[in-house]
Length: 115
Image 1: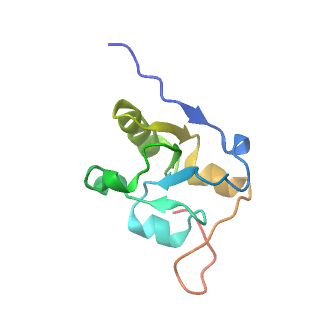
Image 2 (image 1 turned 60 degrees about the vertical axis):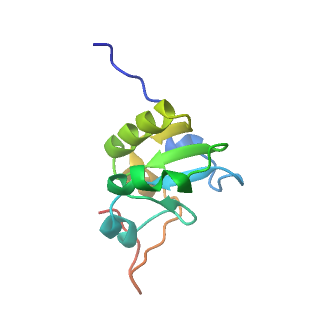
């Protein structure tokens, strides 16, 4: 069996403010999202993806993000196999946070964090 290469991008290669039309898809679960996420990201948990594919634009670049990059790599592989132009964000939210990139929390008064 030949290993599948998943297109990926380093957090440091992404502009601090993503250009209009670029989608940052966060596939983590609800509690992870609530604790801390990228402002403006689209949240579709991996467990709900197949049922919510109609929410993804077919004509835009999609960067897929999870906590460390494993779930997002699987989602990236799936999306690319089904016609989307997707890339995995290497290291996920842990690397995003380590680079001091913007994050927000859905929990009132809480500092955003990666759980």
